[in-house]
Image (cartoon, rainbow, N blue to C red; front, side, top):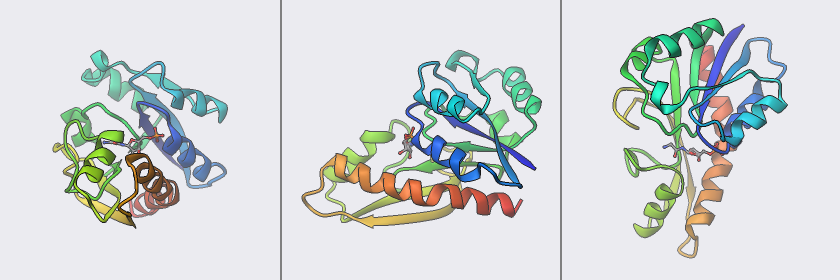
Length: 189
Ligand code: GAR
């Protein structure tokens, strides 16, 4: 059994979708949900599925002993970032090299980097008049949104799409593709 942890900061729709995907799996268990925010709704979602949760606030996130002890206690071999908004400290990038994935709600390398998250991304895509957007699933490296790309999926945009419409199209791709991409990445470990 491979134990994975999901790191989240906010609502947690991706987190819950991944939990549901692996529920009943004989190979993969979502063993822990980690949030930097005690008010993250993802924690409520995880608890509903009886998944252990832990809050590690921003001030503690650079503390190697705290983070690594937590992950070792739950025997975590793979980390999934799902709307996690803190920078990942170097020690964690190194410890989980090619064992930590992120999802970004745009077609990287466009619309990535610091400050580019959630609605900021979709507003930038709209302002640029892009004809398409999509999702990028990538390995986590020491460069924000700069790790090696595992998979990308795109969706056409129309001129009348609002940033909210773009967000909805991108979200549909996330729901459809993130769990299966994680499953494939885990199978190749
Ligand atoms: C998702 O759209 C994810 O791609 C994005 O945050 C949202 C989280 O939603 N991540 C980033 O913008 C990272 N830069 P959720 O909490 O409902 O899964």
